Image (cartoon, rainbow over all chains, first blue to last red; front, side, top):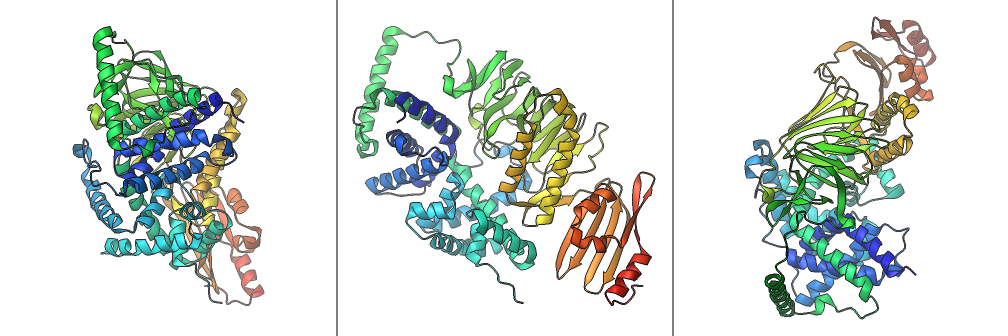
Length: 169
Length: 456
């Protein structure tokens, strides 16, 4: 069994390495920076608690994302709100003058994608977020979501069909 | 025989990097043979990049992440001392309890502040486990309450400004000297799992000692090999501390190798690896990336790589990397290098990202000669440029394409089973270049053997 000091050292290192993507995921899931901060802290509190059950041979990032995912689900349940924030910072904030004209077309497409993502079923959004922040595979996402692996792929594919139609216009 | 196509949702999963292991390999193999699925996959990849950008970009926030990390590290520090005690369940507490506690802490803190009047520290402390780099000389400034303040070290993953000429010890050895007002950070590059020095604005010089040093300027990652020296000039918007974002990109980044060799791996999907030697330089803008030799001429051989499923292209990319490896052999004699490991990691990182479609940038490398042969259902082509020789076989709507710098090297690349076709072509040397010619005698023999009409 690992000593507390060793656990602390290991988890501190993991926190330094992975806090960015974990925070981003929690932020997307919970909607505000304050809640994401809480969730990140709670994630590592649980990681500390269950550290002895962690298999070092496993990818620590996946382990932490599994915990963060559960923390976000519980927070959302407890607070009866699972929202995608409307108050995300304006991407052009602070750097608008530096944005080259050539990027405007990209920004417009991004805006379309953002709008369409808001319309996706929550589960499909979660799949995308677990992929992009946690770099999880469809099997790992299926395990977390309690779905079959094929169902993860089909759900994502169907969800994206609408987006594809919009982007094709 | 009808080709079995993958399910659309599997192509989506592949494009979104959700697949692993043999299934992923099988799909990639299919894509290398099926133009229809390949086109669908390519469009899904384009879409994936956009979706990823939309999801990830706005959710990241440097200051909030730093705050969350700080809180977590403090919690972990306290945790080791109170582990035996039952833990309060953070999320179970109503918001007003937290607000009341926070207010109480503020009152106590203010009271202590006015009673004891703490002396403003000369340098902001940086905890041992948050140090990205130690300062050897000069002043490192970090943003504290919206103002640049001196720090005792360069904190990990934090935009840092050189208050004057600043020399820092890099995490994996080596050092960097940055001119006053340069803005940079030290963080982990997730792709290669190694520390990276990102220069957002200013000028600097990087020395790699016994290990490679990873530098990011603009959208390019530069592996400065052991013993190498790199000069960096970056124009970026770093004046407003509050405006710095994790996705901030400079307007123009120039890098020149002053000693040794370096390998450039641009993050953009449009470009691939570029090997730089002594004196060669690289210029990056949000629109373009360009490598030049010591005389300012565009570097002749650049690889443009985009994610692809073409195994041949992937093989070619690896050959190019292999060439670089050979070029660097002399370095191994002078240094106890981690060279093998480095290349192994580099190869793996390319492999992890899927195969690569490689295009040779023929800018400055004009076509010298070309021939084409139609042999029944088989098409054979060969060509030479100022820099390379190439050979291609087209059969059953699939294409095998090889390029090399010499005919001997090209022959080694062509699979043994295709040597019969390769022998139909001759490459004759003319000065520094080669010329592709048809071998009429062998072509006639081939046609007789396979009952084909003699080509005109």
